[in-house]
Amino acid sequence: MKSVNCLVLNVIFVISIIITGCGNSSDASVDLRISENQKDTDVPYNSNDTQNLQTKIVLEYKAEKLYLPEKWENIEDVKISGWNKVKKLMSEEKYEAAYKELEGILEKLREKNDYEGITHTLMKMTQLRMSLHGYETAVNFLKKEKWPEGLYSQMVLNLYYGYSLVNYYNSYSWEINQREKVETSSEVDLKKFTKDDIFYEAQKAYLNVFSQRENLSHVKVKSFSNYITPNSYPERIRGTLRDAISYLYVELLKNNSLWRPEELNDMFKLPLKDMITTKKIIVNLSDKDTHPLLKIVYILDDLYTYHKQKSEHEAAFEAYLTKLEILHSNFTEKEDRDLIRNTLEKLLKDIESFEWWAVGMASFADMIITQNEPDSLIKAHKITVDCQRRFSTSIGAQMCLSKQKSIEAPRYEITGMSVDGKER
Image (tube, rainbow, N blue to C red; front, side, top):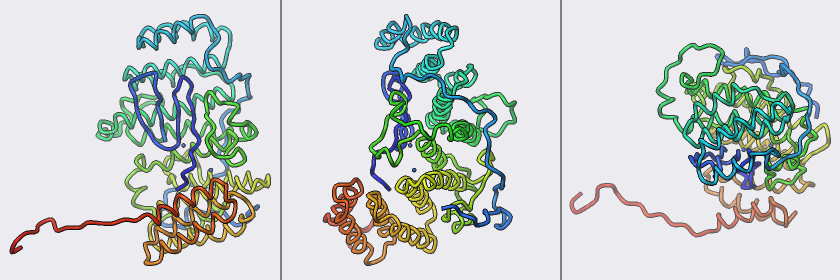
């Protein structure tokens, strides 16, 4: 619902992961994009309380290995002889020749144990393979190569690997959707991967990063500006790598084109009341049978709790607001949406002394409009006007103004019969 430009994961060399859409390109010189928010003592939700709900209740997922931060200079180009030649070959669209040059550069960087240089080069080589329409080759290459064992290298490569998988599905979805499940070894074989396999493999990549979130909590997104382009959100709202990883993970999970049919059809079985309340949903993020919405709730509750404990009230509200927006878009029954909207209305009273309250008011107006009642537009219009009276220069006030103008804009409809004419 929010029109604020979302966080962009810029995968160097003008490769970027953006939270708001997905596109493909065969040109290595252009963007590749994919669509990127109090202590509760209640008893956590138990899947046995809801009939046929496929979820497992477990303790917090722990990473198999924790990585330490390495030296990271946020480079634009690898500082090694031969890199300018690669750039020249790419500008001439001689991608095969550029790839051959990169193979030699990668070997030299491994000898120097240059973590960021290796990461930079691996991503460039993957991009070149994609540009030559070798998606399967590119993704297999990236997965099989040895990755530097540093926190930031692992973060960037896992995010790019997950992005590459989804981009592969988007490019070949018709063919992939025809595949039947074949039991394979643990080794990645994209030619045999079904949509479910691809979605789960992408989730594992994002989970690898999410499990390292504590070590990323104090690292600013702007420190990775050549890999992650800061968005128009204020730094206090989504300014850290922990924020970035959490919201990117959520964007992956909420892509319901990757959901199974039963996940789309059985949402009524999910415990909405518990999902709305913070820290009542505890799920196994590594379990492929756990519904994506339950995972989303868990991730955003985790982020909410983190910011709340640090008294970062606006960032905590943003995480809660994002959760409610996603739930509102997926639960369409009137009773469910009333519950979500009423929850947001109560939250707004707690946050009204903060500027980000206005962003919540804009979302609240959207929820009122979707009621489709005779006076819905009147109520929504009042909300947008009231929103602008406070924090008049804020992002939220601008969003409210845009919605106000949209409501006030004249509109007309023309209808006609599909079969019309004399004596008919």
